[in-house]
Length: 259
View (cartoon, rainbow, N blue to C red):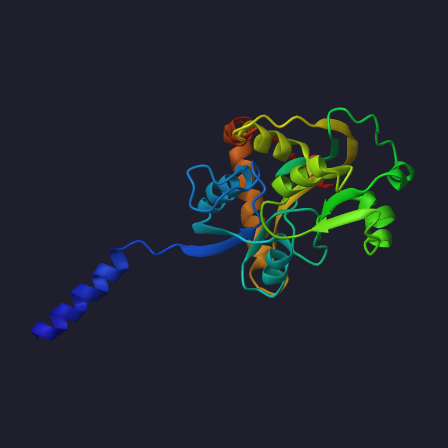
């Protein structure tokens, strides 16, 4: 009898206790201010949007960083639920929400005393350009990077950690003439360096919507994409999305940009 009461009490306690939220695992490289260090009080605009938006559907979000190419492979194989900061050309086989979360401006930077300016792919034949492996650069990828990726006189392609710092060092050493980086990412990095970073904006090569994209290997990815869209819609209506974007210095996406 006593044992029956104990079992009944345990069942009632379980019924009255809130269900534990499902934990989703997101991954990307460090691309502040869009996605920054894991376990930080400021993990990045996209990460905070995911945390707040998906919480409205009962999900918890855990986020890790690793090199971009490895992050793509891990999400593609279903080791993680989603990739943070993806463009549609990065991972066309992934499951995308309807609306992008932000707009990226991929910009070419040179040393301050350089006079070269980007107006189109033909201008790139005169320089050696630094780019990040497996990043989406829009038409620049299709027309220039992919056809020339094995030509080390035209391109330096990096992967791994601290790529932006490495590009700046190589620029100063004359190993490259210019490199491509997203505008807000460059500004965020430069503002936090112990010594001033002086670079010149030589032109925007591509503007693109960026997303949190879900694994093509997992059955619940479309459900998660809908949950993210619903949560972001609520954040936009409340003004929370714009406040987060302002705090991180990024341009938030809008539903029209995903059409």
